[in-house]
Image 1 (cartoon, rainbow, N blue to C red):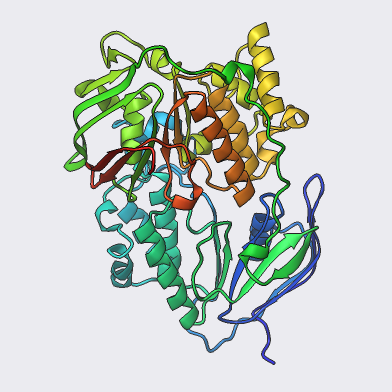
Image 2 (image 1 turned 90 degrees about the vertical axis):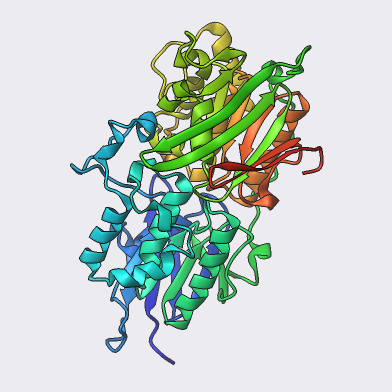
Length: 486
């Protein structure tokens, strides 16, 4: 029997409680493993231990690299989120900075980032070209890193990994934010890597995975447990259905109101036109699904609605019956919108506790800086109870797994009872049970007449009660659909 490339023996690690306990795992060269299971079970922690990001563990993690292999003698971990720095090495960005023409030039371009990575790893730039077009990334070379959406950032990480072809590749949530075509390309790329004897570990909660996956495992009570298929992964505790908090009920409007009206919208960054001749109207009581491939203009379109994009003033945009730039402040707009997005999550203050996080939604701030009124305090208690977060009120957001952080941020978007909800890939990082719960809440809100825009790539992970659909393709409207059966 050949020597395993990774041998993990009696691995133990804990934060404020044990996460990994006497865990053992043996992996051979060229195997493909899928590590799934519950959010918060320790999957990302295990990946960081294997890759060397976490060093203060007990037990053994041993690597046996074949000296005859031409693959780089590396273990590469691709995280769920991409962390980048500005030209001076600082990561202290603010949420609206990606749309600020004067501030955003402070980061590298995509090409410069890839070129830097290639020089560090001694890679042939010509080989990168094999991946750019099939991955749909050939037009992003000159964009600043801060301009990229979450899906585009994920593609950039994956491109580096495919280009490097390390001995061991660990990818956390590989399909996060990716459109259908990109997911298909990625699955084929994974199958190709296995043929070249790359050892692959995919941390994955999605129903989609490459054909090359041979083994399915999860972490249960700190130990590794084998499963026959993803269908056998542990399921989260079923949540007891609760009525929506009283202040979120009865959103039906007496008269239909125009919430958003866009006429002939055009947005450009230098010579690149991102949105072209867009017309769109959203009325009260409508629930829209917004879709489009990565780079189609979805994030830019949403930034116009939320008041974050400075080019909104140069276009015909009416928000809540008032023309943009006719005297309203950005806070007048934000007061009527509740928004959650991967980008907002990136920039949020992770040192805030759960109560502060949710209450900051009253003031559209990235943490809580003001005292709550009596009525606001009552609403906070109601929504903590509704989301089963009462016992977590004083715990830091950073101590929770990604899925539970997202639930807290959803509560933040709802607490001020906004006229319009904008939910951009809201279920990233959640396990299947959390996703189902989240979307059931959205359906309950829709039944009460809540107006919303929902962005999602996975057809199997959408709320059921979406009434309208808009699809963007290369910055233009491809499909505009009004139907109760999307």
